Length: 328
Image 1 (cartoon, helix red, strand yellow):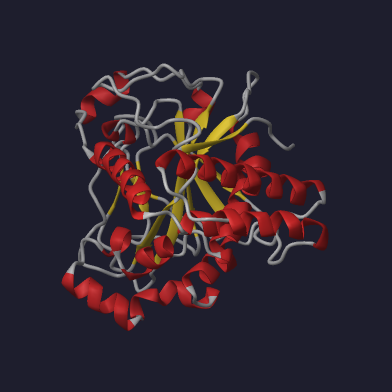
Image 2: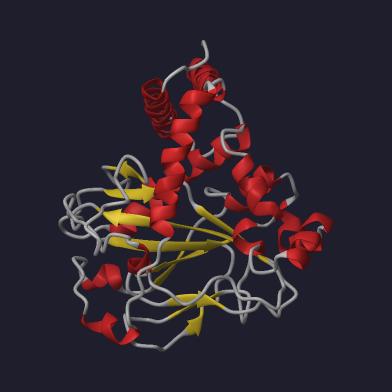
C-alpha cells in the first residue's frame, strides 16, 4: 500500500484496521480458538491484510500524522483535566446503572484460556516469571530515581508497552482482550435488558514497583468526565496484597477503603465512576504489574450524555470498542 497523505485516509485506514481485527477475532472464535500465537492457514490472507493496513498507517506523511496526533493529544489533555467532586456528595449522586452493576465483585477466570500474563510479558520482551521483579531492571531503577511519581504510569516498561502498539505481540494482546470481553466480561455485565457493552480500546497499563511514592491520588472517574454507565475492570498479573494494590471504597461516599487482595486469575469489577480509589506507596518487595479498562453497559448509556462542562469526550467507536452480543 502507498503512504497515506491526508487525515481522512488515516481515519479510514484506522477504521478498516479495527474491522479486520474484529473479523480475525470472530473467525478464531468460530473455530473454537481463544488465543493463538500464529494464524491458522485459512486465516493467513486476513492476517496479511491486517499487516498491509498497519504498514500503510506507519507510512503516514507528516502533515496527516501531525494533524491526527494533535487531535488525539488535545482529546487526552481534555480528559486529564480533573473537576473535583466533594467526597460527601458522592452518595447522593444518581447513576443509570442497576445496583448489581454498581456492586464490587471479584471473579475468577481461566488463565489457560486467557493467558494475559504470558502475552503481556511477550509485549514487554521479558519472561512471565520476571514481572514481579521488573523494578530490579537497571533502566527502571534509573527512571525511578529521577521521577518516582511517574514510574507506574510513565516509566520504562509503560513506555515500552506503548511503543509496542501495532507489533505482533500487541496484536495478540488485543485479540485476547476482545475474546475476554466477549466471553467473560459481557456476561458479567448482563442484566435482563442486556443490549451489549463497549470496552476501553487501549487498556491502562501500570507497573507499580516498590517506592516511597503512591501512584496518583484518591479520585473517582466522574471527576475526569467519564460517563456514569461505565464500570471498571482491574486485572493484576500477580498476587496483590497490602500496599502493592489498589484501595477502593465499597460504595460511593462510604469511605470504607480496603486493599484489594487478588490472586492471578482473578479480576475486580467495581464502580470507579463514583467510588473513590487510590494507591499507597508500595512498601512490599513485589512489583505490581496490572492493566485496567472501563466497560459501558449500552443498555444504560445515554448516547447524548454530556459531562459537567457540556462535553462528551468518551465516544463509542473511538475510546470504546462495541461488543453487541455476549457469548454465554
